[in-house]
Image (cartoon, rainbow, N blue to C red):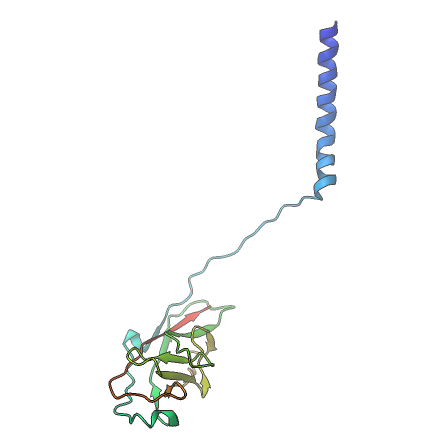
Length: 173
């Protein structure tokens, strides 16, 4: 008979624990609710710049004492074309990346690979085009880009060739 009572006592304790455990857990941990997350993955239309051809900008021969004037400006000729597709809720962005010159507070100057005191500052519709910062544009009315030779303040440039490279990208975001 003692065996039977022990089993009944354990069974009753187990039954009580099973009934009250959810209430105890909810009281200690707050209420619980289910979260459902959903969405639609879409393929954004692809965009190309300048028909995927390299854009060349030449300053020709520039006097070493003339760079500081800021008079050496060249337009950057380019075009943007994007495939047709659903762009609902997206904006076409133009992004310029390159090695930034440490002497430009606007962060819009690409440093020359041959001369660390010489750079090419890029302007977008007359305003500094900050490197690595996407700018919203319209494919039907792209901004004018311009390259301007600049130099570190207080230095004298030496004669010689110079070049700089940047990447221009258009994409829907």
